[in-house]
Image (cartoon, rainbow, N blue to C red; front, side, top):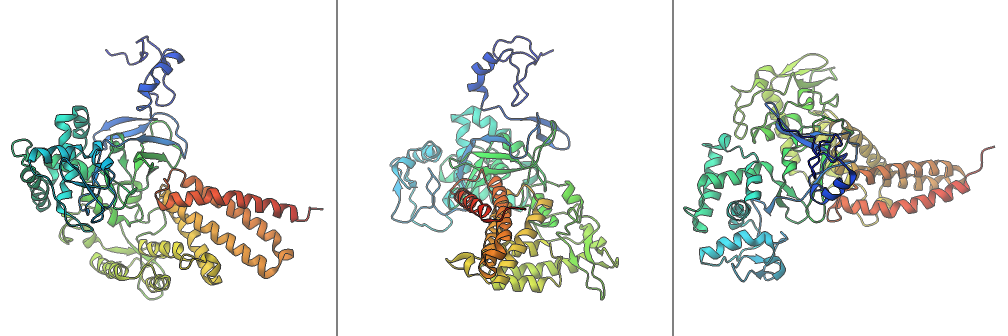
Length: 549
């Protein structure tokens, strides 16, 4: 029987565990310090578990507070996304014609000689040299077919050059068995496997099975890193074991150097499953489930099982019966749907036979009618100019006759409008009408509250909304001071500034891990500039207010 309660340094039996991860033991503090350089990269408050329902997953090993970092790790491998214009294969920046430096060894264009010498570029450089003919890229600014194989090639390279990394990659899910013999699989074989074998002359070096498994690993486990334009792809080790939930308890961010950060957005008890949303949490339930099913994942989380999505009616449609103010929803979204990547099949969809039921009058409407309505509204949204605030307001007004006020289509446009008001001119909110300023305030409050219910881990959106809300409240107070005069509005102005500061602090807390390369990171920088100014203003206001009798 193996005794796991042994000091990691001297193998002496001990009950003292590392307080960070609760996974390894040390007999003394000195031995813990001695081992810290090696252990620090594995010391996370989570451990890998496995069962028949979830497969491999992570659970908390100790109490984790909201805001704590659960995982921070470097990528196993990085590379360009599947459909990308020519990018630098060292730093992934978009390349422009006549502004490139060709690698002297292989011909692949980079943005500089330094990037051409980077370790990331070694795999395609190695196989291109073996090919015996340099690569020539002449078309820029549009997706280039030569780049869709690069990330897969980089995975394959590890088999013969970094066995430890290769084994870590091979331990990840690829869903090859489920994908095989589909039209999509056959297209991917031609696009990726056959291209790699023929273009790089690697027949006999790698099998089609090896190539397709690496490609599947990238598709299932890859994260698009938004630090560059366009985004690049990265695969992480422990993060790949975090299970999905449509209302997760963690979110992810990236550091400027490409590390990923998994941060707890609510307090977790020891043994709690650590979860992340694999899809867009702002989609409706059927959209999320159909997207997840494309990767052979049938989600049965609490949000998917509740058709009201925690009472928000996020997917609800208005009942059209006269004198009825109710809303339609199916009895359940948890139904097996076949061939989700193709057209909907009424014969296999339980929604079609069950229909959508009004919560008030109990009328039943067929799923086909609901889907047609949603498709029509989706097309309208697709052609709408979302940079036009008036167009957004017209959409909201028109669709309010068909959709619940919190429906995902309504929320999508409302979110755009809330962020857009005040950004139409360089003068910002000072040029916005009072009605528009009030609308911005109302939308920011409404959507923030909605997100707290259905997607509290969406910290970037919530943090950005709260930043907009603090600015709207501060502008409202400024206008009231101007119209009512200091004597009348001073008390209100002081209270409003305190509320605005509180909201700004919450925004900063939600965005604290966002890098400066992202818009949310820029907002974080603005909060650090605004807070001292607000503190000074509040101090002055406090001095001007009359003392209580």
